[in-house]
Length: 68
Image (cartoon, rainbow, N blue to C red; front, side):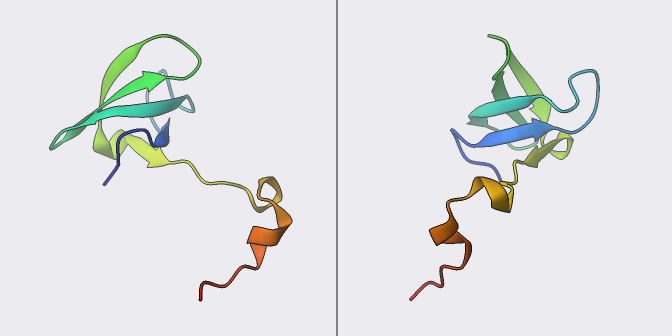
């Protein structure tokens, strides 16, 4: 499930590809705020995906870090 403040990407529809931040999580949908616009939307959970960080965007010291 998603958590408040998490950055997500919209997967389908006219806003496909837009980045947004979670404002509220409900049972079947999530209230998000679009990063590129000052809009608040309610989106079904299945239409959102977690943002994945590319390895090249990570600082080098974290790429091979093993938890103790």
